[in-house]
Image 1 (cartoon, one colour):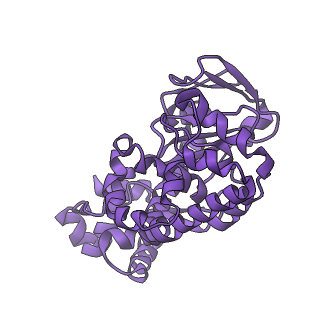
Image 2 (image 1 turned 135 degrees about the horizontal axis):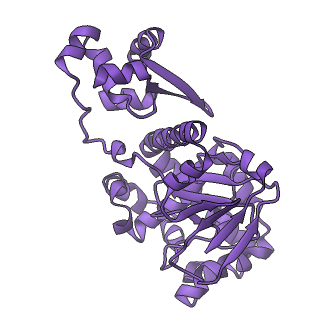
Length: 328
């Protein structure tokens, strides 16, 4: 198990981040272990033709070990709540090529016994291998993830973070940690990840004012952290609400009484806002323009039926207590 040792200042500095590079790298598991992430299968089934056309597809598949591990250096800890993909890719590009073998081997050797051929062969010229990995990830992002999948996924991840912030404010850190995943346990300043895989030894990680960052993800099955305990501390956990990403899901119907009171468009919006959702995501779910959604949200906000919260560059809307009463 991993034990994160947090002082009072560390607990006060706990933060969340929505990382496009993190999700890009972990999504490679869909091409090697798709059965592990059923909520994402419809999206990635649609993406397959584009993925098969990528020049770097073979190299991308090689970045995932047989036990689904990916090398730590591919997912540097974000420095803010909502970093851009290219800024994060710049951090990855700054990796010292001389350290590439030491970065790759811990992810592959314990389980697979050897590096995949594209990586083993590429280490003859580590500078070129690092650049090839970055170019392959960029190609994958631009052609497969960024056009359609990422806008929906980002809404889910940001809504998750807003939910965690509300839980923290209303019920405290212990409840918030417990709700992230049942592998996490908080007691007396120690946050423990009970791991059932990998090395069975215990590892203590003093946070020591370095910050502990939590990252919701669509591609982890439980709370997880870096292979190396020496890296800046971070924990990935399964994002809630991934079922809402399925494009075939019809919006829930609103009651006739609510439609008579508010009108059908506003009633449908209010019904959807049981979880924090962005204007863009609402427009996608309802197949209308973001402008139309914004007009109705402005009325719901003015009448105190919804509240809003900002995460990074996004504004997320949620039913207020009064809105909850109307939807019962």
